[in-house]
Image (cartoon, rainbow, N blue to C red; front, top):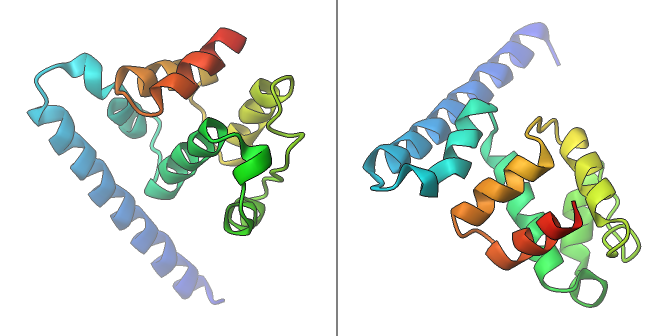
Length: 137
């Protein structure tokens, strides 16, 4: 890939992230209770892109559904492409917090796990899963 193609790809990525952040800002600006959009605020503050956010949500959904029984090949493949090995042991109760912190590092998400979970919980995103994970911190 030429340097020009690389620069164009980077520009397109940044434009998409700006559009995503604008969408989050609109949600924040039009919401009555600012405490209920803390996760959206973190998306902007920590400069997350849509794929990072989707990956966080997907991880929480897997945790909510007992991954050792319901994890499907698509999920395993999706995470493997991101450099994350998901398996029954990785998401077991005794390993989950350490592995979630590792996954955030792999995904280049700098939000401390506690604050991430608190903001998701406040915004009612996988609330029960966040509560259970917060108890383990």
